[in-house]
Length: 86
Image 1 (cartoon, one colour):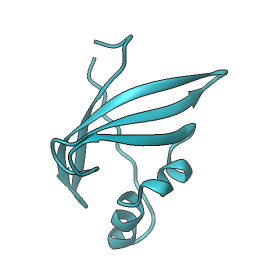
Image 2 (cartoon, rainbow, N blue to C red; image 1 turned 30 degrees about the vertical axis):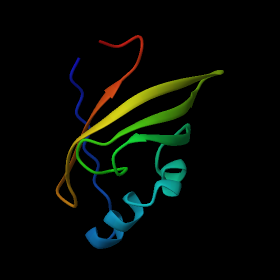
Image 3 (cartoon, rainbow, N blue to C red; image 1 turned 180 degrees about the horizontal axis):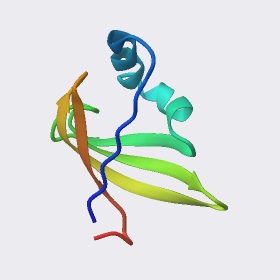
């Protein structure tokens, strides 16, 4: 499955990038986000891997994120894997 998401943000681009680069802000930016654990590489940089934890309904969901492109402020792409997704 391929999924693309695009969001328009009404603040200056430099402030947007600063907010995105600070992991503690993810709880404010993503519904249900509980935290993350760096597995390898520098978090947010191309090739890095992190475990992301979300609250979904009454349970929790764990994703493995592999950053495939970080060209902020223009593009951020990643591969997100879950045991029930192929």
